[in-house]
Image 1: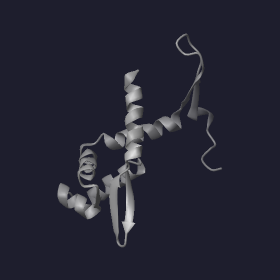
Image 2: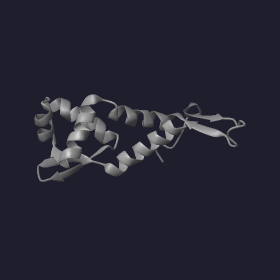
Image 3: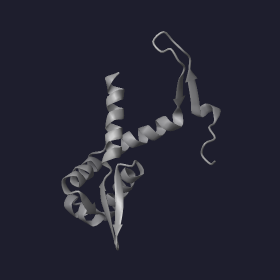
Image 4: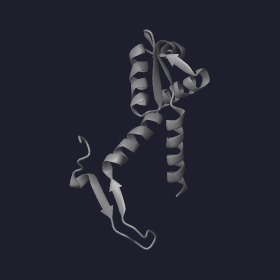
Length: 119
């Protein structure tokens, strides 16, 4: 299986201590992916796109760049980042691609951030 081979340097095992009764496996690949996801939502323009999609349900890239007064290429680049992070999903209808929020994924991210900040 491609992609499942981890380098020794990709995972770090932290040994037991008094507060934790088990070893902690720190997977840098997973952490890097999580950082990229959080970075995707930590941008004003992408937050504006998320808000716009929340308010309108689903929109084409044309509708998004017109409403936000952006260049088409800028809107497309930011939508690609949100799509790679799983924050938006697409639905093709004929020649149009509609973007909408992936609410289950956003809920997962929100819960993860809540767990991290509660500690």
